[in-house]
Length: 291
Image: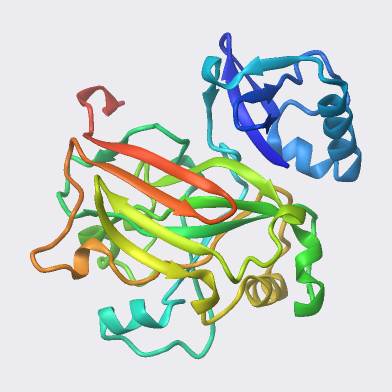
């Protein structure tokens, strides 16, 4: 199932994409929660209600009539792992990590498909990182590796947009990873049952028509289940938490000349079995100033 958060007639709610062109309308179906975090927290009951709505054939809206938002517009946690593909480690010249190394992206950075990535006023070193993201579906702690799949709600496409000069100012990397619009997610959340193996998916990133990244998620050093097991030793993971699983080689900062993003370009990330996430790049508008 492709779960979505969408806006129609100025109202934002959850639904499911059917046959790539029709959206299930949950407006008048009370068993289907309005927000994705509420939907995931409701567990099997919400999924059953959505399947019933799909089977009924009622309450559908043309996909062309809605605005798709990020599947999880404001996750409780947006965590990401660094240095998780050997070829990316090689291009950075760093050592392979002994343990998974995570950082936080502030949830206010999240945007959806088609939304603009802003090149910030304070930097021109704007970069992309195409990544598979998993979304937690069940509140959990101390999850064994062999049980970790059970707490995953599904998968989506992420762009770990990075402002490189701000990223290196702090060992945590948080500021450079959390600029407004630095967290594109989408276009939908594909439920776990539709992804046979999250560790055998093709991942590609384009800037305009230029293929910049091409890898397979099987190249990860720490896989999705190991990440969940490791993180859940330290913290409770909750429905809607997003974990970005790392990027392969081909980032702009390691190109010669540098391949930083420029206004007018479009970044597209495609992951097999999930879909495409595209976002244009623009200058940060003047009306972003608030004081």
